[in-house]
Picture 1 (spheres, rainbow, N blue to C red):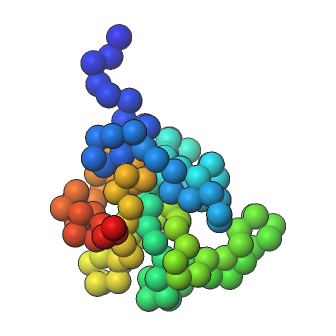
Picture 2 (cartoon, helix red, strand yellow):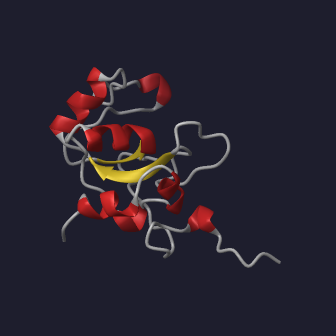
Length: 127
């Protein structure tokens, strides 16, 4: 039996991962959670609250999250929507000063392989 925690279901705070969003349904598996596995090459592990600034930034980098794609059951995003972002895209936006706020409780522990916890905390949603 392993002594390591089940990090697949843990958030960056070490607690159980909570859902990011069900409307629109997000996550690599479209189950509302920002969890990942070996099949998720993008590492969709950071639960973020979309802003117009970030959506424009992402589109300028070739990832249009605004335009709906019904064939992929993707409604398109708008400011205020919550979405599981790829860790590298979030980091890129952070370095450009355009990172959206994150929900730490819904951001997977796996994200810490790419992003420092201090960065996430600095951008954490304020309740």
